[in-house]
Length: 216
Image 1 (cartoon, rainbow, N blue to C red):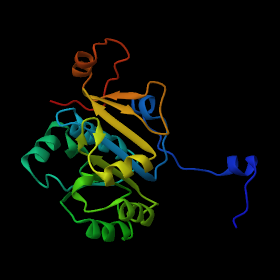
Image 2: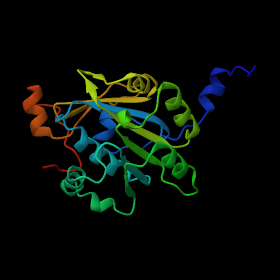
Image 3: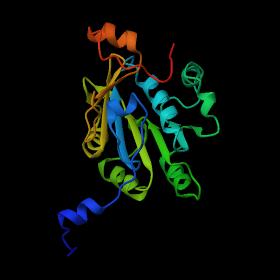
Image 4: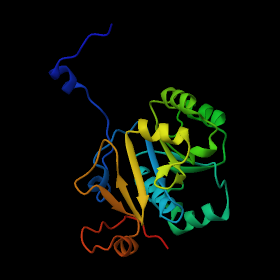
């Protein structure tokens, strides 16, 4: 049986967190730089734009890979790259063309492999609740970000429901606003992907967070 830790011993444990810039810190605080995050939202909500902006922010600190299982190298992804000027992080972010999970896992095990991985979307991974946990546990030194399709306001399918439950940071995207539903949150608790459209959708005109990257 493992030894129990005192309060002082617990507080002495050091965790590496992500030093988000504003407005990201206002939305999501300072989450751990490893583990699993989960992002879900309806089609047309601004989810893809949010993911591109999030990747650019994470690339300030780490190298990453975006595995588009759902759309591969489609025109939609190419347009998103152009709209968000992803060329500015060309040396720090790679795009994978629907790489199967077993191949992605082998890539993640390689020396000097990227630190964070976006897997878009979880419905195309072929993982179930158990193999999902095994995959995340096998790469617990990485940051894994799953996106998900929805059924109403909930993730679609049992694996997605399981991932949402286990995720340290859960982000719901609606009306061009990404809201923190996770264990870490900043002073505001949301990030506006497109401030004008978010203001129009939500009917407010204050606390609009200006994103670091413009979108069309």
